Image (cartoon, rainbow, N blue to C red; front, top):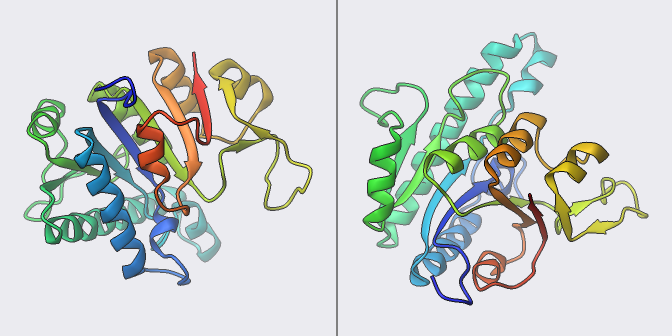
Length: 239
């Protein structure tokens, strides 16, 4: 870790919706290629990388209720969607010569091993990219909470969350043209203002453990590397 690279170990929260690219659902090969390039740039900087991946490009638990699927079952389907995304990402990374493994919060024998913090930390120490799937393994908890939890468990220096916008705003910038960009926030400000950065359990966990969060636009190429080089990109949330 150099003065220009403030983070040694990073937890990257990657939205499943990002993976669908211009498609309505599923995988966009061009996005996977871009993600692989981003990951390679991280590893070339000597930074250890873990990824929590979402499943919104395949299925969202909350959306299942509209079709008569109860929330708990819908969330379980969503967890399996993240497993599919994690396996796909691992295969793409390995195809680019990047050592990677998946670890799951739920048992999927013969497909992906269960998460164990000491094993994950050892793999990161050895230079592998570790992809965490199935969220926390529990319904009603989002992958934001999973990212906060895994970040704390592996002793990450920062949680970097990729979104569809440039950071945190006072309102939804896609619907409110007067939304104000907020480049620097404390956890207390996020909670007091009810900002939709992450769900409350994720924000509270990051606050209690003082895990720094950076929110940025994952659709802009090269942003992850700029963050790791110490540039003030996106929104920083801190104690």
